[in-house]
Image (cartoon, rainbow over all chains, first blue to last red; front, side):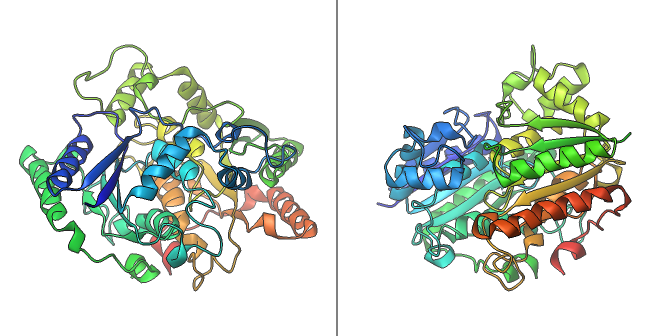
Length: 228
Length: 228
């Protein structure tokens, strides 16, 4: 029984993102998977990386360095409880799905804060244990998102450039860095500007894909995949 | 007397980021510039894009769409006061400098939240007024940041790839999209792993650059700059 974690960032349950998230829960549960959820807005998840993330005294109170302090706190088991809980969910999952609307060629700040605060050194990576040796290796990650711009804007000759260009920091810089194998992204282009029928197709094709998700091979997460 | 806005995101005043920020204030003030600051952590800036950003009733309370609601609220002058204040600062500035430590191939969540919440439709762009026609055209933007990895890791053949790959979403997807002309980034590689002398050089070269910053030509913000 595979464990799946969905990190979900949308304010509106009736949004397409909400439907995509519900569909994933439904389809994966039907398969017998154990699905866990972090509904970031509903949880009022804190995105800011601050001193509050360390319980008790600091490693160096003269000069606050978030990277050092969170690493030390991880080792001493002094991280804030919301982070420990998120790390526990990640640790148990075989597949982590990130469901969000693209904000400014990236994830919304609330989800970026999840990355900044949860994937601390010692837990997700520990130099030189990064990329193929990242501490979360043997797990799969998948970005599922909606865009404002349409597919033409996000094409090689389009004003916003190939959509793969903007995937690099998220898929390589975060997921691959932590050791995740990256599955191909699930992208719904400009759902606000297409017909109701087209939006239904977006849902159907996601449900369809999830039926055979465990047979998929990860992408080859190198510059060639992104920039050639 | 040129107006400059510095958006600063570091928790520790004694950090290199803090020193780079102080240096910019000092040098630009010496030149006679009018320098304004948004010290995001000190302001406890809210990164989450939520319903709280709209004062009073919603345009569509049945289905919350942040993009639509913030656009409508901008037009009706019903945005939260912290956003109006940030927009005023941007409006007055000729140059906006973003000073931050690179977190996960991007900016810290608190600064991403500034982008998500401040650069709303109607204020920063208004399709098709984007990119060269973005509403903030005639302004300059400059990213100044520190990294964890060293220059070799962030080179073309390095494990983290050319540093320019990760600049695309920030410089093209945000700055250029809003019309900003983008000045070359100021990058301090791995300050935590170099000598005190090298760190001093990083400060000196930033101060030196600022002396002639107004003579600089923007980069040519096209895929060629990033991926060739």
